[in-house]
Amino acid sequence: MADIALAPRRAKTEIREATAWDKLRHNKNWLGFWFMLPALAFLIFFLAYPLGLGIWLSFTDARIGRVGHYIGTENYEWLWDDSIFWLSVFNTLIYTFIASAIKFAVGLYLALLLNERMPFKALLRAAVLIPFIVPTVLSALAFWWIFDSQFSIISWSLKHLGLITQNINFLGDSTWARICVIFANIWRGVPFVAITLLAGLQTVQPSLYEAATLDGASRWQMFRFITYPLLTPIIAVVMTFSVLFTFTDFQLIWAMTRGGPVNATHLMATLSYQRAIIAGQLGEGAAISSAMIPFLLAAIMVSWFGLQRRKWQQGESND
Image (tube, rainbow, N blue to C red; front, side, top):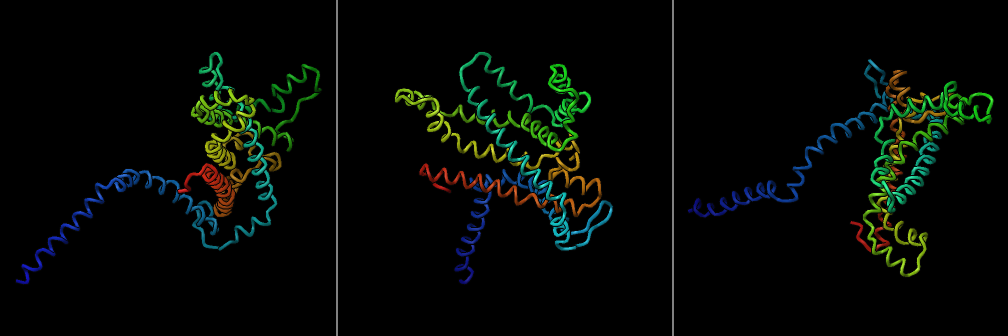
């Protein structure tokens, strides 16, 4: 009789276990998780693990060919008194701020221009992408020749115009070197900003501009009250990526100047490479790389809060 009384309870338990497993396999939410699992594993293996290992190395005295030992914050304390490190921080901030601001201004102008009706518009859009699709090192070598102290086409042209009497040492002067690398970064980064903003402009309804025209709005007023507000989320995203790419730039600087002259163009990324790989001080190089994280998180948070504020203004949920 006891077994008969327990039989329905056992059956319910078995049914409950089967239902939980079926829900795990067939529920739409869990189905999305299973599809995302390979990408999650990829990100953990190739991004999260190297990031964690780099942070750990920054607390050790690891060198190339030798396992490091935990030394606490000694690497960071040494960097705090390192004038070259602070120069690289200054260079990185100046490089990122100036290049990102100009890339946004020029990219927005090109996006607005390419959004207008004009002949050969498709060809022009394709041409704008050329600087972005050319390999970075190839672009850097081209600019290295353009700004060469002996064979610069700029110096040659100015001399033939009678504006200068001797070649300009573009990459040998601290100020000129900073200007040159910023110019090269702008040349490479403008297409990304322009094409992304152009894609955003394609989503703006033409009827909004037609209504504004009927109301007598000027082109500036249409841009200020229609185009810019609708582009704000896209601007936040594209500028976040632009700042991140510029802040962590390595190839362009290393191929053009190697951080010279006298560390005038050293960014945090290039200095980290020099200390970790060339000098063999893995722990110190990892500390420099880890010091970049707060700046990158700050850029991401500024963008995120900007988007949240925009949602609140539009009466949307922040979820």
